[in-house]
Length: 577
Image: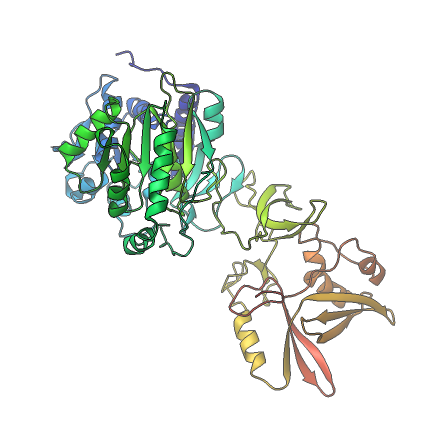
């Protein structure tokens, strides 16, 4: 049968990338496609091409139904396994199911599946007891060669970071294992808008009072306690009323408005300020039949305002929506993008979608901050080239007035070599005393020889407890030539100093100096092997200084025992509050 739809070029590229990857590898893979890109069509085409059994799972019945419908449009009969849809059929070659129903009845999935596809894959937890992980484990017991493919618009989880490890564009997202091994295709939201496949979002800053949720603390998923939200919102009735008045004014001449509320109590308050005959509320407790009726009326444009609390972020399509009002706080990039995504689908006569963030979430729709949290308010993304492989890394850092990087917080090069291994160059490292290998600063044992690594916290704690030891928080280091040697003086915040000399004409001392300082020269972007004192004194950038210097008294003098670089731990570093 001729397919009832034709794939867009990027959808075909995603299908081709999947086929290419799984022909040469069994490692898990991820496709990143923005909300509105048509992931269900990609899934349907992959299922059509499959020769063996496939299981497609997701977390809401609306998506199960939608994905199965697209496959059925190809003239194929899908199996559906979802308690909410009152179907439990596992006999067809391709089965679409809800993870809740499937995970609760793993015994009914006794066949060997060749491919597991997870829609909204960012919802997979790394917890081995989670429903998705139990399903993957079960299917791999039946077929060790099972291939796992995820699709998502938002490849990250708050508190976890990127959900994949290696990127097909040649860089590494994480040194540790991730839920998915490879991202094999990623279509930027900006590209999809530029190509005319999505509506342009117009993010506007409200010109009236906004909510201030800054005093509240979110949980690890970026969400806030309902009681805390209600307590804060109860103090802002005038703000809520003013926001609703502006939303009503903004909606003039627009087709459909979605309002995302913080809590059920908040949503009911909002509904009370909106035109009654044109507005409705959907919450988790809304009965299925009532929900369907409300959504049908909204899609038919018999309702203009649809208020919801955490239920219409995925699996809901109303292309005519052209105004999004966010009245709820979140630190979850995924949730923010899912909410905004409700207004980006194309619709006749629709040229843009207005986005008003009354919760001041401050998330960049196109380039959200993901991965390592921002280390300080004055840091910004900086480009740092690897001196070994040349990869252009993007780290948090600081620049001077000319834009030169003066400090960055990167730890290891993110470049992916042709061997598909991560570049081994480290900007910050802990050196093994046994074999000399460089390790991550948080490592407890050496990756090369397995020897225990020195714990800097224990070193500092022990030195502070001994009368014949001194510890200074090093704020800087000065250099000068003294009797043919190089004298280094370490300065702390309070004017205390410790010093030591290096005779660079001595091979052992020169090697030690370069291992400590030359290796870290130029914020580790330009490792330098110094041969003479003059070379050090004439170097274009200052020497890197350790965070702590520990010395031990010998007679009348203090001898340097340890220099601790790249410190991260409970002890305050110089100039930190």
